[in-house]
Image 1 (cartoon, rainbow, N blue to C red):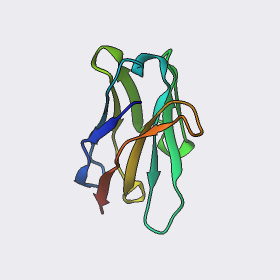
Image 2: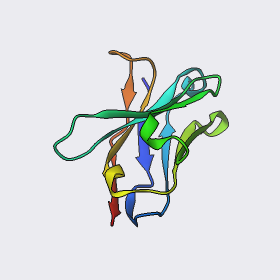
Image 3: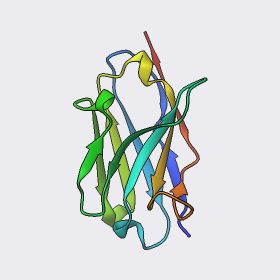
Length: 116
């Protein structure tokens, strides 16, 4: 079992930056893919980014060039650096670890609010 604890959300003005962290328990973090989804009010949950166990990142088109995902396996932690934030990025961000399906683990979510 893996528990994920998120931190780093908050309120920022358009054009600003935030860094989210996703800290994992246990000793399997290094072999799991990790990433983030987000859910804006009245919208479906949207996949944002992921990084494989080998460190290869992928991004949804709307955040390419603005968001950077990374991982530190020694610290069992993944990071999402979000730059040039826009009001459309406002959402609850959820980190995940593991493959899609019932074996995926989820963080508790953290609110990101971008004011115009």
